[in-house]
Image 1 (cartoon, helix red, strand yellow):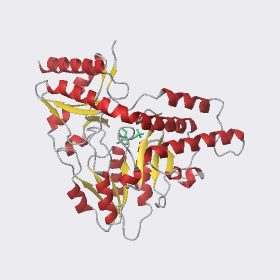
Image 2: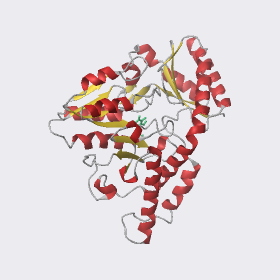
Image 3: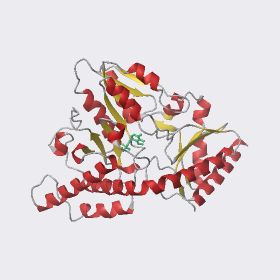
Image 4: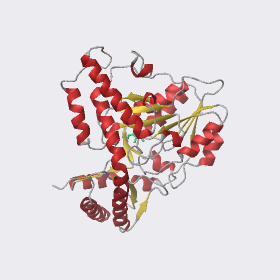
Length: 377
Ligand SMILES: Cc1ncc(COP(=O)(O)O)c(C=O)c1O
């Protein structure tokens, strides 16, 4: 059976070079990087090489990279770590309505714990309303958290502008760049952010590994306390194989991006063009976007049923809805863009990757068109 994977925003396959590099650290090179002996020092050297590779992808200095267990942990660490170090009267967190739940649910928990939290709106195009954000950032604001690329629509957010206005008011800036890693140039100095989250498994690295970039001099409390690993910023014996795989994946991404970007954008546009030929289709998200993501709604269609029909024909996609306790929760991102419940409930996200081909895109478009036609009957 033909299988077409169009869910790269959920996770990507492991880069073969990353897997090869990881294997020795799951076998003979099993040392603990904190040990002083030969075994330990081999592992230490590998972790530090990976730190350099990840730092290079971000334009950061290696000591500014803190390895974590993934994007969610890094987001938690950024918000909690920054807010645990209040500066004067500053206690407020400002974020946006379209952030990943790793940020939004942390913000909600912080609000329950007594921190003032404000959530900025986005426009119908899926892009943050900068004027609204500006009105919320004031002298009481400690941190502003805005994602780089949205995971559901791919819409790029004006992070450098956010950083400028937040810094003018003396606030710290965190950016969840999980969906930008390997898809768009990431330069922490050009973005001028203080904290930035990356996850390995979204850029062809292993799952359960990520990092938080912490600009030199930024005051942060650790989220995980214990030993002195990661310069006292994240305790726990390092996931050496995962970190090594992350490093190699980051290097590969930096090399592949220039060629991958335009090729994947052309395939995404081809897929969208096919889908827009189907009657009653609306594109969700506009303006600057990452190259790989398409999000569309099909009038009169229940996206969960559509997803199952596609899976039966080998096409793996995703809906704009997430499983939550007690059932399917409609996408908070599309809701925040002001769309009707019907439009949200009928949305489909297709995210392409490095291995996606023209034949796959054409196959997926055919399968989607016939499944939509069947369901509408
Ligand atoms: C924007 C964004 N932030 C954070 C995460 C969480 O990353 P992880 O799966 O590594 O915890 C994801 C994963 O879907 C994401 O898309």
